[in-house]
Length: 153
Image 1 (cartoon, rainbow, N blue to C red):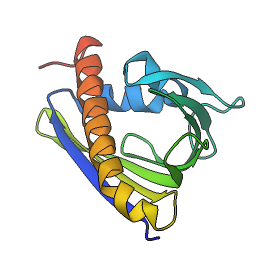
Image 2 (image 1 turned 120 degrees about the vertical axis):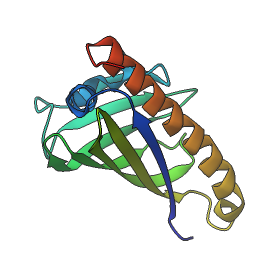
Image 3 (image 1 turned 90 degrees about the horizontal axis):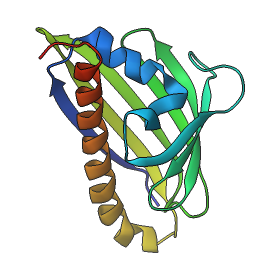
Image 4 (image 1 turned 90 degrees about the vertical axis):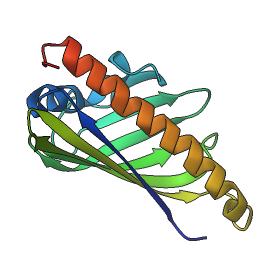
């Protein structure tokens, strides 16, 4: 079963520093995005390479995410280990922020391996649509929170 990939982008009116501050608060993504049931730190490290968080997904399932790349103000990569209730075995993400005038261009790339062997070929496109909508919502919520936290529109 081949790995699947998708990407979402959003041009945010909020400045890069305001957007970065939200994503850099790695264990607390659920504090500004209602698309998750909860998030919490795993261990004492909450930023940088090696930081980990446990994510309770909606409607069911969970995953543990570990930071594998951290470029201050610009990029976070993660490796994700999903529970059996999640329709994929493993995933990796890359979040990049680029200044864009007074705002920020945010790109979220996601690569995952569906569960189910041959059945995964059929479920993959459905999972892609669900993930694309989920990540689009995450970026919209982040922009809203960044603007509410002092970023200008």
